[in-house]
Length: 325
Image (cartoon, rainbow, N blue to C red; front, top):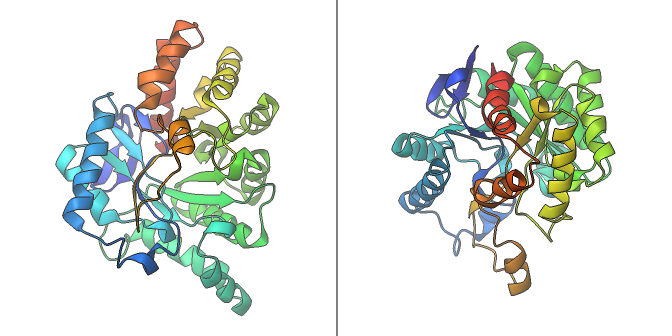
């Protein structure tokens, strides 16, 4: 076994327990910083909201949450640390950046024009991994990477290459965002071609694709794959949970449980003003909560004999221990 960095420091990987691989305690689209007059920041109130979410998943037996919020999307490791201290939930945070369409694009595109961006991204990754984030000493347990719909842009490739360099030196896990479930096979191939260790790579949001052949093209490269948007329906190209269930049942029947993670990609507290959703969308998203898998999806799959206790122990406990060890 090994050790993994959490917001409270290194933890033995066998102590991770039941793990959700992709949930955001706090998230804001870049630009929220300009709306803070009306979307203000109160540390104690945000902590209280985070504690509520931690306790919600702990009621389902979850012991660890990976929070892959990118650096420019409101990552706040002090808040995560406070939530972890008050609840005992293990939280693994990230270093990394979002995809071109919704990320820190102007900042790094300017530096890309100067010819310094990729080296500076690598330096940022290494500084946070080895010394800590923003002077806190809190270290990330993953690098977050992301690509666009139907392409990995030249901008995004800088982050992928810098992350592989950092992984070669530190052994850190790489966890990705695929936009609407596209480019998963291509992400895996590019990372491996650059020299990434496939056993330390998680290709995320693949439940955005409903063609099982897309999933098999990812899995057959030896990486992990996350079906991690359960409950997110009718927005950002997300399919319905019923379609996800059919794909998951097929993958389990084919024996891929040792490479799978399940999660929700919930945003639990928004930075800036919380979005006001129309009633139709609210109805579609009513189950987008970080306990949805345990309350609804897993029981339904069990009822159909599509998932077993052995599958669940592998997916939620064994896989995370192996990934981070």
